[in-house]
Amino acid sequence: MSRSAVIETLEDRRLLSASPLAAKAKFPSMLGTFTGTLTYSSGIVYFISITVKKQHGGVFAGTVVEGSGQTARISGTVKPNDDVKFLETGTKRRHPFSSTVVGTLSTDTLSATFKKVQSGLRFHGSISATRASTTTT
Image 1 (cartoon, rainbow, N blue to C red):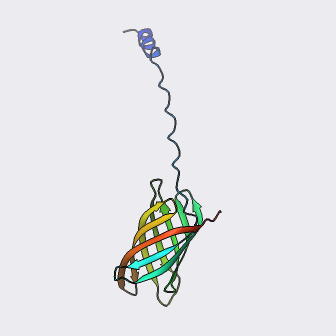
Image 2: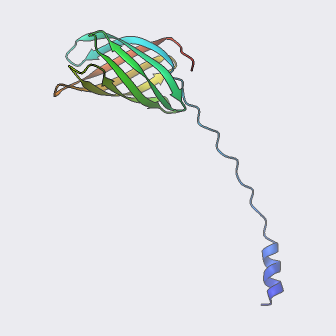
Image 3: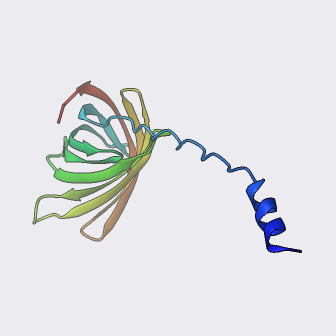
């Protein structure tokens, strides 16, 4: 086969067009204050207030106040499918705690379960909270 025949064959090929980039995923807003209940598996129920002040894409940060008087910082993620996960870290040195919270956001309602470790003890339960107000960054 001559060189010109090879070149001719290659020139008959058509370029494939690049497919458009997939639409950028839209992350639900976690901004605002959610109020509701924190229910331990033992049946104890406390008021809870979760305030998310910062969100960039699917990453957010804020604070939590529980009716028991405990306060915490939170940092977590929300996915386009409304799955929410965050880590809660207590702010008091005397009784430090940390919780892992996993749940879903449905418009303005956060439904989640939590696992908490405090002073070597392990607790678990659920959170149900509704967005009471929104915050803008």
